[in-house]
Amino acid sequence: MRIAVVGTGYVGLVTGTCFAEVGIDVTCIDVDVKKIENLKNGILPIYEPGLEEMVARNSQKERLSFSTDLPSSIQGCDAAFIAVGTPPGEDGSADLKYVLAVARSIGQNMNDYIVVVTKSTVPVGTANKVRQAIAEELEARGVDIPFDVASNPEFLKEGAAIEDFLKPDRIVVGVASTRAEEVMKKLYKPFLMNGHPLIFMDVPSAEMTKYAANSMLATKISFMNDIANLCEIMGADVNMVRKGIGSDARIGNRFIYPGIGYGGSCFPKDVKALIRTASENGYEMKVLKSVEEVNDNQKMVLYNKVNNYFNGDLAGKTFAIWGLSFKPKTDDMREAPSLVIIEKLLAQGAKVRAYDPVAIKEAAHTLGDTIEYGKDEYETLIDADALLLVTEWPEFRSPNFNVVSKLMKDKVIFDGRNIYDPAEMNEKGFTYYGIGTKQQM
Ligand code: NAD
Image 1 (cartoon, rainbow, N blue to C red):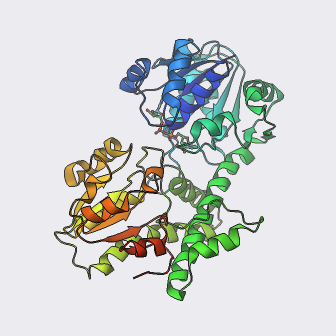
Image 2: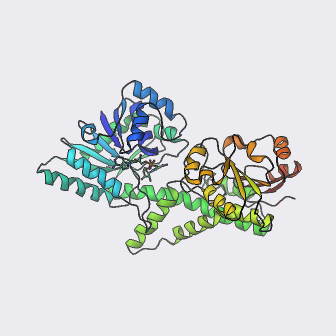
Image 3: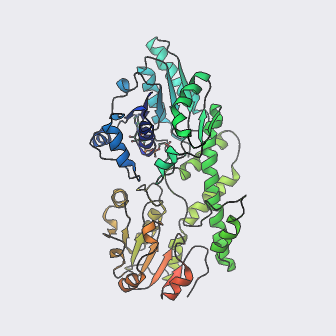
């Protein structure tokens, strides 16, 4: 089989590479000339564990190629996956201009039956717009070529994207014809070996499934952050509460870790877009509005603790920050809580020295030289007034605390992800603040 993947970002590159890995002939297409040139030379635009090797292997086997030329690349394809960005517009709704530009381009250039698959996260009703855009182009050309539009939302997690794609919990596909269903079944058959279900449904339900999934996960996070904040006020320990509720199979252990708010390219924009879709259709998503509000406040929680500790006098103080990306194992800085915290510290005249295992280059696009970057986590600590743990990279979990305490000016740790044990920190002579934990002095 042969496919084109249009949009070679986090989702498009992983999708294309994983399809190539199971033997499908894949062309990844992008409008970004530099990105495509780099990929042809084995240079990846993103960090994702295992991806570089997989791209190299499949490029070498000539199952995976890269191109800026959509017109020639879609010829002879069974399917074209649209995986371009859908950023939030001014009003919070998903901006479909890239998706529809690709649809028009496909309509202008296709010569045979093809299944056009929206993999980007798009609101209910988008498949109809895609269908209409293609039909208009075919009509303008005066040709009548059959095609189908399918919805195939992506559930991969950055940092574990390959594993998620190759061994998915489930694959959701919305189709409106058996012909499209057959093509999608054939494409995904190699990924179903471990009994993971391929769930077919109608197109609007597939489009909604993605928003419902991300909104549910964001809700779990905000709910737990609310509980954590209340735990602090009431003298309870959210780490205990989490274990207590997580052992209930109906609740489960995942996505109930309190922290400093969700970020990234998906949860914030998808929650916003679903609220917007609802309001455009006369319905109010009350729970999700609160989820968003709690999250905005939570991004400030660590800064507020720092500010309280130093009695509002942050000018001239130096803060070490461990972790910049919105979560571990990615260099994605989109909507990262670190950006909010750093902006607040700098606004108060503080100095920031940060380290992240992979996201420094990406962070520097936004932060430039407003902060210093350490060459490793220890260098950030030299004469620091406090350490702020912002992203829970595995290598931050067991640092050499003797070294940490020797390097720091003031032995105080603000742990935004609760990765350290408060009592142990106390024993080691640190003043420790977690999220929703009892303060140990
Ligand atoms: P991204 O910004 O990393 O990549 C998008 C790519 O599309 C860019 O390389 C851009 O140059 C390219 N592009 C834009 N217009 C184009 C056009 N007309 N033709 C060809 N290429 C074009 O975005 P992403 O993070 O991969 O997300 C893509 C979609 O997948 C979004 O809708 C997102 O919500 C969804 N999604 C993302 C994730 C994730 O973890 N990143 C997970 C699931 C779903």
